[in-house]
Length: 409
Image (cartoon, rainbow, N blue to C red; front, side, top):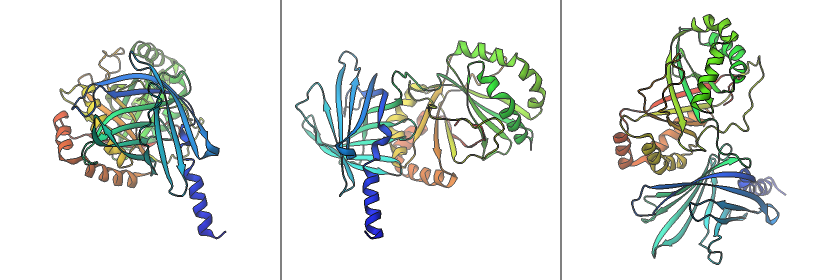
């Protein structure tokens, strides 16, 4: 076998493994439009489960789905087969309420971590184009379906699924999240990072909170950004009281405070859905004393909403922005809106006048981020850009963040 034939065989084998990320058991959060292709923006949300296994000697797979649709729970099967010669997948959806009917398969494949699949079909007697998208493959898999009445010029996303690994899981970390941005004394960022990673991670987590991530801001040498999560606002009050009233903070607070100019830029957030928080099941923290630098770039995009309701912007984001980001190869790994519950630990101020939508994405490096962002902006279009400006009061705030050695993210 010559090198070209070997490479071709390897590519065909690799293609049949495209859906390996989905093998196993999952909890699934569904969002479906109440009416499709009717200019309707009312979403129905419900839960479900999915169990996926490979078949046909690895050249196909199927998943058994239970959908707890309000008032009409049912089962369904997704069947996928891989054509090695064409290097493409065909996917059929079998609805258990009408098992004798089979829609035309969507056909396509994966590129740059995004799966895109199309079919020509009909809806209420009119021809349409159907699109499936798979994103967030290695973290929190996201699937969505969209219809087009104009041959693919415009799309209406009408169904999304968020997958969370392990049976019985009802959400991700964490129901309450603080996004904390500290302005530091010039030259003191590394001093604070070393102190934080040595003294303040395990001791905070011992109270029950989760230290999600610590970061250097690439655009501001004197900014330290970090995230911590809580199970609810009441637990937050207890856990913060325990830590800030405890011996470790008392022993090191003067050294920590000496590095800071301002620590009050704090956004109190909650996930936009039960499955839109950070997926930390596979995350592993480096051991105490680790100084190895981390690869990759986390991007936090903060949309300041003014009078727009967070839930309304979240719906707009899912309908209009997220599909375009996915087309550009950008996976949204977590999304949040402002937690409006009064601050349960007034000793630490938060921005109680804030009204924001925050989403997080990950890139190999800054160059990859800039390229993908340029593509995403070109896909947005004039109408969506105008609607975005209408729903926000200023340009989005974008934080380019590199994780510190012991960051969980």
